[in-house]
Amino acid sequence: MLLSDDRSIAARGLAGREPRPDLVCLSHLRWDFVWQRPQHLMSRFARDRRVFFVEEPIWEDTEPRLEVSERPGGIRLAVPHLPHGLSPKQAEAMQSEMLRDLLEQHEVTEYVLWYYTPMAVPLAEGLDPLGVVYDCMDELSLFRGAPPDLLDREAKLLAAADLVFTGGQSLYEAKRERHPRVHPFPSSIEAEHFRQARQARQEDTEPGDQAALPRPRLGYFGVIDERIDLDLIAALADARPEWQIVMVGPVVKIDPESLPRRANIHYLGMKGYADLPSYLAGWDVALMPFAQNESTRFISPTKTPEYLAGGRPVVSTPIRDVVKPYGEEGLVEIADGPEELVAAVERALQGYDEGWLARVDEFLSHGSWSRTWQQMSDLIDAAIASRRGLPVL
Image (tube, rainbow, N blue to C red; front, side, top):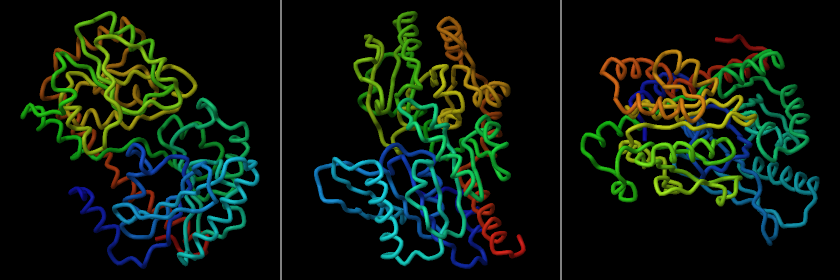
């Protein structure tokens, strides 16, 4: 779906340009999982160049192969299928060979390498890209189960990269001394998409698995993993049993049995990106119940602007990139601990005036994914020109 902001920026970005170099993205995230930063950006890059999105391998009892398919918007998805029993070095060597075969078969000669994970560095050794981008959307070394050699590989990636993008301000501050060209690109927004929640709320239309739940409803959508404070959710449910807590999203990297179970907590599972506004429309307050741990130290949640675009009051735990700017601007309630959370939700349930919504819209108008993409694209053009010794326009 091409939004109005996308049209104007895409037209400006394509006007008078030569064909763009291909983009080869090496990702630890699946394309067909939740729609987030990689999907927003790569789908836009695919408008003016070929994009090859190379995932981590799928392990199965099979002969090794690289499965290449096309996704809507022109994304070429490449998924290695590897047999069980390979050593890490064997697996990397096989993926490296598959990557070279991919480039050869599709006649990829001028391209930019884009990394989402430092663990992919050995796969591209010996390649000759026009430029190297490291889009550091999370501090992966702090996530549960992080590979022990991730930091060493990140050091190699930082040494090779022409540009480093970070998923938020706090990540930028952590990386800016380690590379001369680090640029912060916090979570952006497809505002028109999530603004559909406002109309849906007026029309009182919502999905069947949520429609029958009593009110008030407090909702969260996103991955449910070690970054979510499950004890805080349980305490909130116990403190106000009349409040219905709706959790929308897949459970990842944690035992589903560890989820708090209460009559007023409802796990609705993973939903498509297109369906999220309809769930958001049925909530009285949107929640960001993130834990205060190492895995959340540098996060910049995409759902902050998404919730706000839907016109819902938002209550968050004190995540640094939420406190500044959203909390400081009075756009999001910040609460630390069960008692503060209950009090913040009670305030949010009273609603906000039209002035708050106007300030929300003004703030969000400066942070679209299309603007982020255009700024990144311009930086890549400049980096390639610099490598070639050409003037930077």
